[in-house]
Amino acid sequence: MRRSVLLIKKNEALLWGAVALLLILALREVGLFEVDRLWRGLHNLAIFAKDTVPPDLDVLPLAGRALWETIEMAFAGTLLGFVVSLPMGMMGARNISPWPLVVGVRLLVAIARTIPSLLWAVLFVIMVGLGPLAGTLGLALYTVGYLGKIYAELFEGVDPEVLEALKGVGASRLHLARFAVWPESANAALSQLLFMLEYNVRASSILGFAGAGGIGFYISLYLQVLDYQRLATLLLLILGLTLTLDVASAWLRERYLLQG
Amino acid sequence: MLPGVSEVTDALAVRAKGLRFAYRRNQWVIRDVDLQVPRGQICAVLGPSGAGKSTLLRLLAGLLHPQQGIVEVLGADIHNHLPATIRRRIGYIPQQLGLIRSRTALENVLMGALGRLGGLGPLLGLFPKEEVERARSLLSALGIEDKAHEKAFRLSGGERQRVAIGRALMQEPLVIMADEFVSDLDLPLAAEILGKMRQLVHQKGLSLVVNMHELPLVREYVDIAIVLKQGQIIFSGPAQELTWSLLEEARR
Image (cartoon, each protein chain N blue to C red):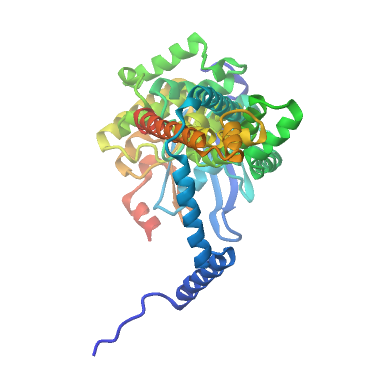
């Protein structure tokens, strides 16, 4: 008789066992195993879905304007955040910046990232009042938190020989950033920027919940007055926008960023 | 003679004394290395891989700090308050050349001028016309003027090598340290490039320290040679006196 051999090590098996156990406990804790509750949920979903058809297209002109404002906020916020993230990334990269600066910048960036853009938007609504300016600033700040970290790590990945070669020439830190770090990581950095833009377009559509401009205001309005047919129109618009952006950014990446 | 050189003419190009270096505590990679390279000469460093050639080059170029001993380049201590005027005239060519892949050959050569160019101009991509002309003429002296606007990652191995040399020459160097810079090339091409370097070295009175493997090339183009074995020098003298048996000895 052939004896089977255990290929998985004992420690590995224990680890996977522990992970599975934790998952099951967590799911139970949040109530995923309460069958009748889930069943009721499905029932409610069916009612909600029925109430959304047919979507009310009368709301289109209004929704279109709000959607445009959402897009503007996303673009402006992303661009503003990008412009700040570049120097932050450079200052946060250990291979070209002195360590006290690295630590300080990374802390700032971590703080910006800890707070989601919706909360930043609330803060800016308090500071600059209702409207798209608050939303734009909120998005920009979260963008700095995210891109600032990604860029610092990206810039640290630059071939050290390129840096050494330029340091040997007597190049300054600014020279290194401009001529070695940026050109060597520009493609990846722009690709990340596109992802960030996609993310911000989605994120900006709920900023209106906090009165920070865009289509989110109407989403929260129609949710509260239970006007699901108008709500459906808005959600379809956002779906369309997200898909369009997906296709556009995939095309841009393929066309311009993947070569070399 | 290059401008601004007179004040250092008497000094040796490179002098190392009692160098010891370890990446990890007490595991010496370089032990008690002494080295003297006169101006206007080529010095080759030989030895099997792992003998410490690259480490020695990086010590000489000031990229690593020795635990003991000193390195003087043109009479100045390279690890302590090296004047910027000397720093920018020491060329260093890393093993993989360290070219900016996404930039053209011409732009890569221009990088050699960064040390003497201050101000905003270069950061905005503006280089003085005479520097651009100088870079062009270096490319044509190295025989690759037709590749000036080709991106570095599209160049062949030999072309990339020449761009790296061009970048070093753009520094108006007094000393060039090159880590294995002809080892990736086939023999005729390596000989051609070494020949060009030898010409420049003798014409301009600069000095070259280079890691190499090929004995015939060393004998023909190099003035002095040292052989490393486990971080120690086992031969140091005129390149013509170097023999196969010495290299064999280093390998054992």
